[in-house]
Image 1: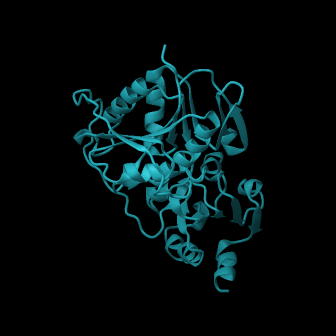
Image 2: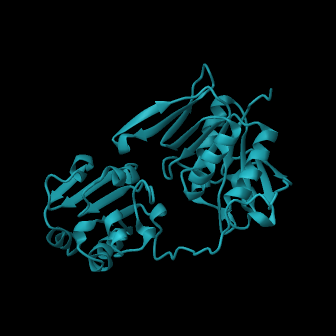
Image 3: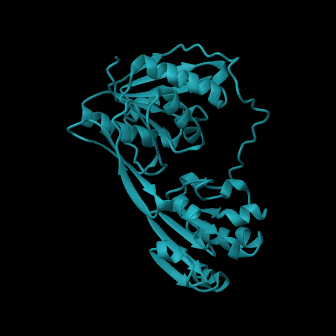
Length: 326
């Protein structure tokens, strides 16, 4: 039986650089590895990895497994899962960290099933039990209205971590580490799905995932125009980004890329301003990681006020201009 040891971060790349979630996972993984007095490793998989391996070391990794293969140019679960599973079988990490991103949400359940182990998703905090050395996982439950603490005796332990829930370490280019070019054979015939087309999300201004302030509009906005005017003006003043609840997306008022909730983007800005948003449990689950939640709604009974730190009862047409005009 293999001895499970160390922490493995399954990293993501963006334009041949570490995605922000990867630096956050490395910061979290470094603390866990220090608690265990074990190594922190990082898996990077793509057709070209470039300097990202050294970047991972600068953000805390002791060892980076660089898997380059033409089949990994674009994300394809059937190919990526082969690379991850084979590496995990080879190095036997105690814990595997992934981001609660599109890629992580797709890969983590597949990996846990293939390894015959447990999975905890959307974790907000992770720590090590000093006696058992098991991972203690804190994650939201009941639509974000409560938090529960889990642990599992199965190893390896697979978890996904919410974006912005963890802080990256300061980059230190003087850190020493090992880059291991890793050759993994990928059977390209084992493809259950085929990518017909990839459409890149058009980024206008700050991306929702990176915005320190998000101004979100709901059904009560009444149409697409207020998103382009009222909400954008407020977001620009606060150096933030505009988001949306589910109904405006379904109505075609805004793009799917602005959708915030359990089935859309899960965000954790410093300030979240919900305007004309009723506050469904799915929406709350998508924004519960916000440090400060401010609600503006004409309905004093709207559920969003139960979650808000500050609230204003009134028509957004009157409340928002009173703020932006100053």
